[in-house]
Amino acid sequence: MEEFIEKFRNGTHYMEIVSAVTEKELTTSNDITEEYVEQKCVKFIPASGAATRMFKDLYTFLDDEKETAFIDQFFDQLEHFAFYEDIKEFVETNKLDKYTTEGRLKIADCVVKSKLAYGHLPKALIKMHTYNDGATTPIDEHIFEGEQYLNQDSFNMHFTIAEEHEELFNQYVDQVLQGKEHIDITYSFQKKETDTPAVDMNNQPFYLDNGEVFYRPGGHGALLENLNDLDADIIFIKNIDNVCHRSQVEDTIESKKALASVGLNVQKQINAYIADILSNEYHLADIEQFIKDILNITLKTALTKDKALEFLNRPLRVCGMVRNNGEAGGGPFVVDNGDYLDLQICEKAEIDLADEEKRAIFESSGYFNPVDIVCFVKDYKDEKFDLRDYTNEDRYFISEKTYQGKEIKALEHPGLWNGAMHNWNTLFMEVPLSTFNPVKTVNDLLREGHREVLSL
Image 1 (tube, rainbow, N blue to C red):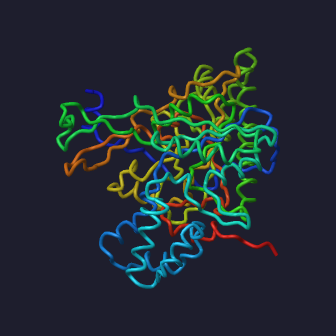
Image 2: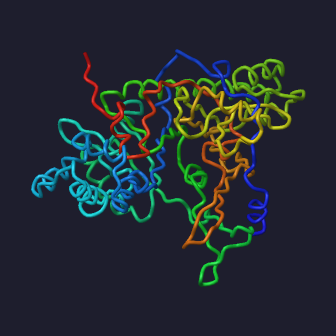
Image 3: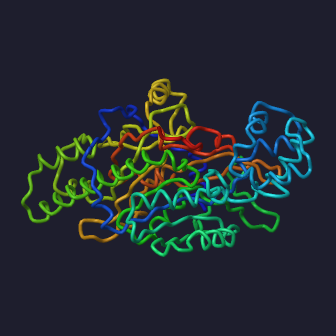
């Protein structure tokens, strides 16, 4: 408990960013192969979030009955949503007029509460795209996408879900997998032991009425435990809501193949250098050049044999980055770690924006992190890394919340692709913006990436 309290006292740790990543730090390659599918690949999809926030504007409308530009857009385009077919009969039978407040309130209630109850479902089960043979959810789209770039005879997917959604998830997956024996889907919950204590505004433990300390889920960084439990050589990470219409999936497929191909090639080079070092037949200057040019690690002190092994024998990740289009979230930066510089994904909250120089660096960032990561988690002996050994525990997050009307502070573990992977070897590659189609609000489903594009 005292360790947690000390973190609250210290506050969020700011990263020492040196510059925003530019094309100079990006890895490029046209040598795309499918050799990676010969290894055991798992697609890892964080999917525990409920869709409540996605429908926040509809909930607000039900409470205050105020028309907004968001509400106007939702109802103007109502028939374009994939879930409209499920409420069409209700709307027509009850002669609901979507252009009146009364009609809109009944339709909104139908979507988030009474009929579809989408506000209580996980995002994974929201119908998002329409095709001739019906509508699909993110689960369907992740399966379809995986079938295009993973082993078509046998591939594995792992979802992290909330315990309260387990039955719904299993019912849906059992139905989807009928006739698809080549796909293995597993799931896990965020582990209770990763929950963190909350404190009051004076950094003292926050106690519940029963006298126990209030613990909260420790953020998506806690999923490192789930990631670490997977039996895999290569892990593809992508968020549940980042899917696109199948008519536009080609860029996603090609970029996934590119990320995996580049990672496999670099992993082979790393393992070859490690073999040289262990056999005492190595050239330190060559290794230093590789660490600098390929792994983008700039040393401030002389490289030694032991230091070379330390840098080389780490998990490797290849992260797709898109051009910065004004989305809220983290991005790629060159970071000063004390005795060396390397590449990191940093969240806005990790950067001291009161420092004019750091703010200027942050605002100059030309790339954005869409969470499109391919991880290589076996060492040169083909044994699994313990991923927990490569975390920077100082990169935790503190946020202010309320609980039953009282202000509290919450602590999250280092983010899964931020501090949790701080001591990995990192490569950044640019991927097309068309591969990034997050659904943060229901109206995001009206964006081009979620519509059918007819080929000429």
